[in-house]
Length: 423
Ligand SMILES: [Zn+2]
Image 1: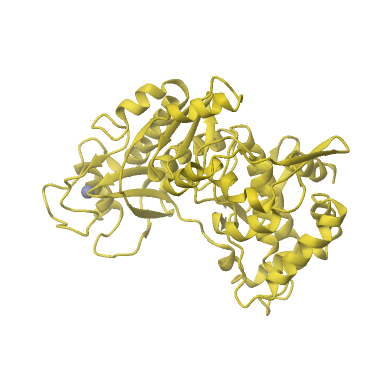
Image 2 (image 1 turned 120 degrees about the vertical axis):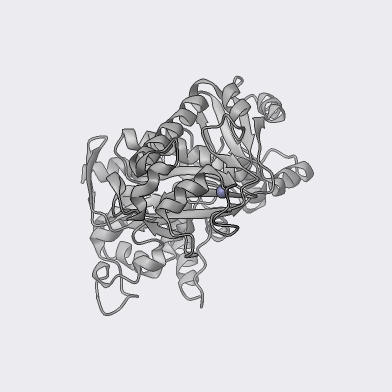
């Protein structure tokens, strides 16, 4: 069969060797992020890069001249794994250790490819009297997402956490960037709704999710965000649009808690995410946020209050856009707990998820414990109002608006992790 002829590509004898090389290069990139960012900046997207780049390729992933002798090495490699005559992005591996796995190749238009230190940000940061030694590395969204995928894949793999899509490689061919990822076996929350066995009434896809499904989604979300909090991760657009699901059953131990479930949650859509590695903050350039901050260079005054040894903060409607702009530009503010609230409120905007939480005592306690008494009634009213809209809106902007006037627990993740552990 055709796939056995992979060895015609000089450096990649066979699919296994190809995927091994991908993994080695990804680990190299992560090592550079941690140990030698100067070198990373110097070589990324040059001929020395661990990722392939060929802006003159004629094959263009099958969209150009498929038989051209001026094909880039990735076009040569991928053409052995995927039939270029078919336009669909999903393909199945039919040989080697990845035999049977379904992967997706995602194209993305590249306007400008870059990575550099952002010295201005360091100065602003010093003026804010925050961490004095922190450096900032800014890149385009494609590069930023690629770096985040490399790093988080490695961190999660080492801890055997299955909550990020397997990242195989990224490369530039022609004027497009491509990413090869594991294709999640279920996909979005909408797809989860199409699976009758996850619902309390199999004949009704609007009925509540089974308690075990909702419970495992919340637990896996808390584990994921807790692990990501160790690198001061900020997602950038936390809502159900940034969650994907797989049908793989999971069972593992995390910080003394047994985690199990019939489905796997994956965090996706890392274009705007930022994180800190070796005191260097990696983030993506965002022109809209730059412009916003230039016009509104005010430091938002976030109210905080201390209740039962917990710090609660309230963002306030007026501060939303400035805060989001600051977050998008890499400022390590409002990190994990903010993401948790956004993801959870967004999930609660799904009626099946909401009803499932409300009718289970344990889940109800978890949810209630995140809010101060008066706020609980108000946020639930907002969520229920949303349920009655013709089209349920649960994107990031909506959820952020919803939570901005309530007190949020800055230790929400640790707090939920503790409650889950006690059960
Ligand atoms: Zn190519």
